[in-house]
Length: 79
Image (tube, rainbow, N blue to C red; front, side, top):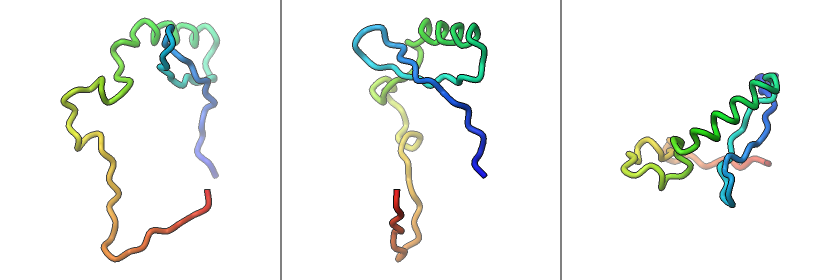
């Protein structure tokens, strides 16, 4: 059984040529969704869109690590 996953719509908040994309759930009413998108557009400058937007970020927070057992072989699976 798959976990519940609401359908989303991809929204580009950038008005110029750049891409600042967010996913907004489609399960809310249209007026609430429009209000949320308006709010996100108004405050898009407070979000970090890339690592360059976060100078001084501790790499322990942003780096992903896969702990592996010594001597074990990786498992290849089909996509």
